[in-house]
Image 1 (tube, rainbow, N blue to C red):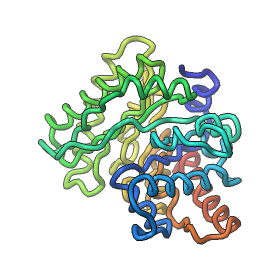
Image 2: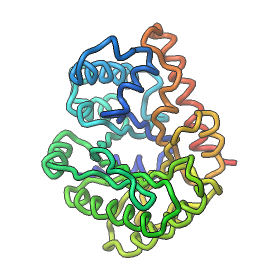
Image 3: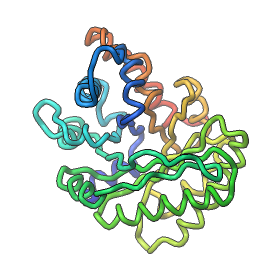
Image 4: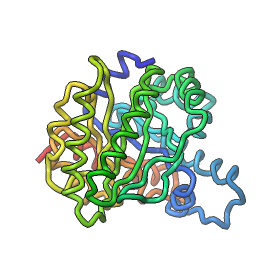
Length: 298
């Protein structure tokens, strides 16, 4: 169930959310960027063991603490793993002061009407119940918007809120992530439609219901200001979406009240071959840069 101390941290504390939830098709790319080619492992089990080791190295680094990283989003296998002998969620909260979230979506359906809905999520209630037992605070669910299609975006948002209702029933705080692709031919138009559609659903929520939003950094700064101010919204966080870290941070700093939830832009530059000192320094620099963009606004 949502813990009061975790809620206070998520809603009030300065900092950002680390997205450590690469899964499935994105995992080989994350390992390649880390300096581990696909020829270095065989099969999914070994691949996920290696990516868990990478994540453990990140989570145990001195700079990775609740001082600047207020939460972390985990892949299911990461949640089920151990860090220094402790379940990952317990380690993050008890040892590092970082609130744990869980990615629950299982990938995307083929694009239709300019959007890609989430695939069905079999066994979701069992997964959510297990997450609660492990001390997870909330979840994240991703779908994708390519075109400024009113009907497509309406379908995306409806699916996101339907799933959020199921998640909220378990006492977890859902992060809705309808990502607008940064290469969308009308990114600003799609974002305006998305903002208005989300607002319509927020206004229809039962009193007291809380959720979070994870959105692409908008083309027009402060596009999402009205969503950030909505009483049902705990926080609005930004995905980097393929922007280089310096560009993502520059764009984020122009959006008041929006904090980062970066994945690739956080771990970019980290290498398996680095010494611990080199690794910690590189990660620390990234954390400082993302923290500043999340807390110091233009």
